[in-house]
Length: 357
Ligand code: OGA
Ligand code: NI
Image 1: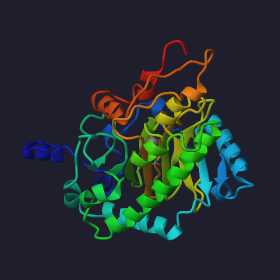
Image 2 (image 1 turned 45 degrees about the horizontal axis):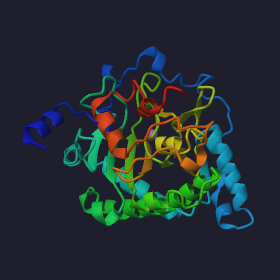
Image 3 (image 1 turned 135 degrees about the vertical axis):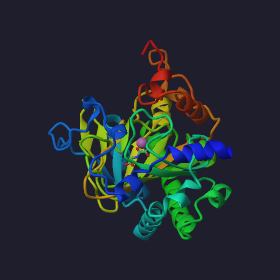
Image 4 (image 1 turned 120 degrees about the vertical axis):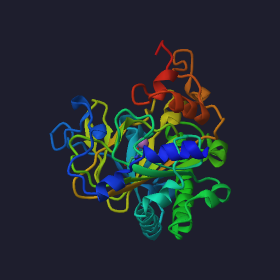
């Protein structure tokens, strides 16, 4: 980036952590959402008691029980595009180390983090705040570092060098989530009646972007959000949260809080699976609420097909009476869309829907 551009960016940039550290009693105006978009914390509509699915992934490795897990995955994907997983095989020490490294990163002085700041969504390593602080009309109470993570040796040297443990600890977590993603994609393909290996090649060569999010305690959580409603563009997102804060939209368009389950990981279907399944499964719309007391961290591991690879509805799922409901798209198409459109106003996937459906 040009030096002048970089310094302009730095001037207009205030991270949520900086605001939190300075002890602001109120959120600045740019964080205040219009009343209709506020999270209605504590009201019965936002915290409805819906039981969300929790799936024991150890069943996938037991020949007699695998079909039960596949059935549970099928039900969860059809109803919510979302489930939590337990016994997923990622050791708790790997998870804890990754969260520790992220805590240390966000606690660094702002000048250190600014070395990685960028408003360019194509940048492979990018520190930022809100969604895109230079273009957002309303700001979100979130700081993040995003980096490409697969294949790890290609990217890891570009990751933060501070804290010194970051590359090693977050690298181990990234590799473990990549393995888990492969198992989940196989199970999801199987649950649609496709070959287990349906997306194998694309998954191996695909991209993995790790979005490490930090939502500091917020003085007015009822007026702001950590992230606006959106769906993820990729195939699957594997999400680790340090405490409660994620909400998903159910099929009745109610917001449901995702409970924090110690040791569990969250699986969210992205737009690529919605298109591949021709809408049998839908990507889940989700948002992040913030709270007054606790800083929340999350790792969203966004898995996608390779940058230029187009995904389209699986021909095995189509016939004369069930034709393709979506056009094809690639990760690159999505990045181009978000760099020139306000993705909060219109979801990218809606631009792919064929009008007859
Ligand atoms: C994301 C996301 C949720 C969270 O990064 O796309 O939805 O809880 N994150 O941080
Ligand atoms: Ni998301």
